[in-house]
Image (cartoon, rainbow, N blue to C red):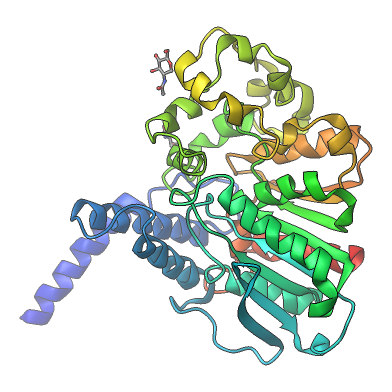
Length: 416
Ligand SMILES: *[C@@H]1O[C@H](CO)[C@@H](O)[C@H](O)[C@H]1NC(C)=O
Ligand SMILES: *[C@@H]1O[C@H](CO)[C@@H](O)[C@H](O)[C@H]1NC(C)=O
């Protein structure tokens, strides 16, 4: 009797879960539909678990518990276990501090004790607010192992508790230490790469503006490189896909966290209400205009591109005044740095994904650097999505994740 009841409950719960979660919003052309659906459902489950815990008064958004649960979900998706991977005899992994910043250092076994080794300093994604060196451990291990480069994964302080510039300063301090004192760690200061995905890519791009060719290369993976224009073609086009998980407009809360703004601004920013009519006509907006920088071939819905127009007759003056300093800050929007600064950047590898709501800015940044004669390579994966980099292995291993990571490994071996 009991087991029949349990079974019935299970099926009802499972039915409800499937109805609400496995509800499509998956690009029709994506080759591994089921895996992507499970990824989407798992992400939605995470956000519902947190909302539930918040409404029960058990925790707050972006609390240590929220972050811990986020890490468990990511690790479960990328390794099959919420506690992640065990030891790996091919790597020496050390938890330590550089200056005052927590880091995880991965040394390929073949390089332990050697000097003049190449190094990648990595900044994880998660909207400056979530995720950690722990949830990125499977990925950073893979990169270190396969590229035979020392990887230093930076556990920078996160927002909203630590808004701009704290996370950026932590990342900068580690990179600067490695450049100046790398020899103490057996590293070659002439072979220092930095990189990151999403918010991590934003900070990598900002740091490269300052350190220029002291760095051997930068990896900007699905990066945020501007916050001025959210009416990008890719934002509009991709609002139809994965729009309850990774492409949700709730992602805008990450920006209000980072910039220490009231959360009410999040959707106003998404609607481009954060720039005033006169700012919309300024040189800054021209720097982020898709008509100028986005080649039409990257757009699926070409009609959108053909009819694209930057409207400049609206905007909230009050929000603009609050944000003006941030909107003209290249350390937040590296794409608006002056040509001379951009022209001095090291080799820049940019990775973008077709179904990512911030697809266009990485492509536009690449076009701009090309225009300024910076050595740059764009790896665009039309079938990719924002967090595809997390799935080169594990139960949700996807071909696009495998390709993305293999290409990163190739570029590190080739350029470092
Ligand atoms: C999400 O995508 C579906 C189609 O996949 C669409 O009908 C819906 O309007 C989208 N939601 C938002 C908020 O854009
Ligand atoms: C943006 O501003 C317009 C005009 O002030 C307003 O009608 C609209 O609701 C705002 N959009 C959002 C998402 O707040």
